[in-house]
Image 1 (cartoon, rainbow over the protein chains, first blue to last red):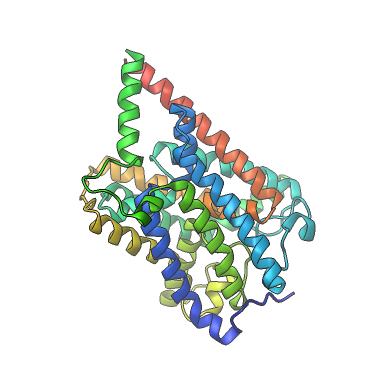
Image 2: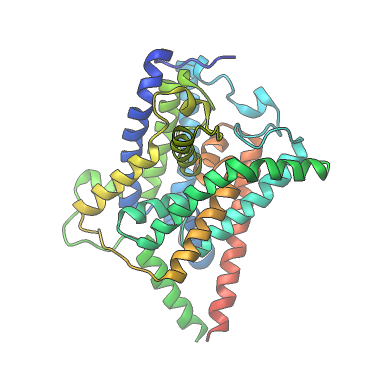
Length: 173
Length: 191
């Protein structure tokens, strides 16, 4: 089913870069002021029992839920897949996941990836959003993290994605 | 001695992530901007609003904000335009005149804020640190894309009631927990 939002197709394809850059500026500003960080929130909770940052991640989930409920009532055609487990099934992957795996395959992939993402985040002192904002604060180490991310994106799309899918299908997942 | 090293670590983390007390009194709005609990709520609700506005351009749903995927879209779009390759990008970026520019916005917004509040400081590193962070970014991106999102898009998808996203959040939390235990072992080992 084609998804339809408030803007027509012709308007939306022009609005995408403009709206996202404005939304990004607001996020960047707020993230810099608040030191917003997802991985850092859980790290501070486990290491020091600090809950300041972790509340931000929890309210992000709550805010998204509230937003999706409100806006899906206002314009249902833009939220055809909401709520996802009802419309698409319990183990239906997040769109854009490597294609063609079984439900269990996505669970395995997600658990491994989540563990690595959490681990790496702790060791570099923050999630990618924090790295991007620290880059803008003048941190050269974070700049190299962002460069590493960019290289990772290209290598993943060019080679790794297909390789991992082949590997997992070979394992019967 | 262990508590002392832990205290040092705590101070290091605090200076990295927490707010130092500024000289001037924060204005009304800035008091909110400094609160992660408020910032999270705003980003979440606006991500839903952006979807209501733009989704006709193309999917996926619950894609309003993602550091990994939106960076991927921008970088791969540029590479595709320059080389004629067809690296994967989300439909919303493929269909539009330009891809999602959220990350460009974040860089600009954070830079403005850092300048306005005089928190811009060039922090230098050495080659070993650059390599460590570069590899960190590479590994992070690859595994984030394997689960189709950074912790932020995962959070949006939890709000979208996606079962896989709920599993992902639990896995990230366990990963962070393991990481903190390793760090505690290391700080104990160096006493």
